[in-house]
Image 1: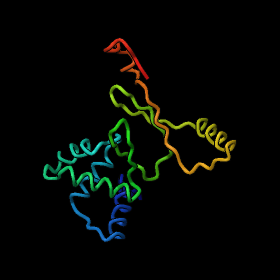
Image 2: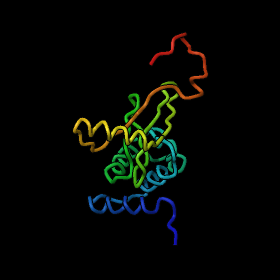
Image 3: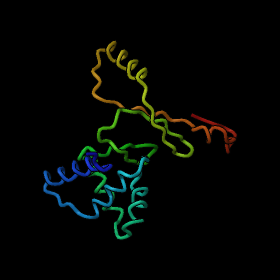
Image 4: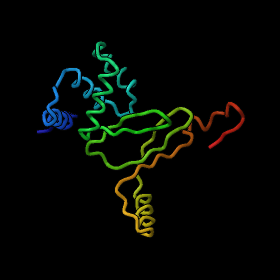
Length: 156
């Protein structure tokens, strides 16, 4: 028997709401469903657009509060990228890092055992115990790098 996509996450969310004496609502279910169906790093406004296709009555505040609940339940991770908050799926995901285009905002995920090994070696040499990390590497994606710079200067 295989479960439907997102079923486990929905069960985790329901358990979190019950444990914290919070109500399950159709609005929260619609928001969770839209979040789980997207493979992108979503801002509150991105998710609001997706949700309002099904439920135009759901507002930005409800989406924001639900994202914060998803984060508290361990289903979403908040990323602060270039002054904008985005959320990505977190539940049972393999560790990964991000390349972020400073021009168009595109986000590319990557995993590298070699990078992980090197940072562990450096930490060991310093006597540092790593409890977690995030790598966000900023630059230009292939498409933006191929465009001529608007002001004649390309900076870091």
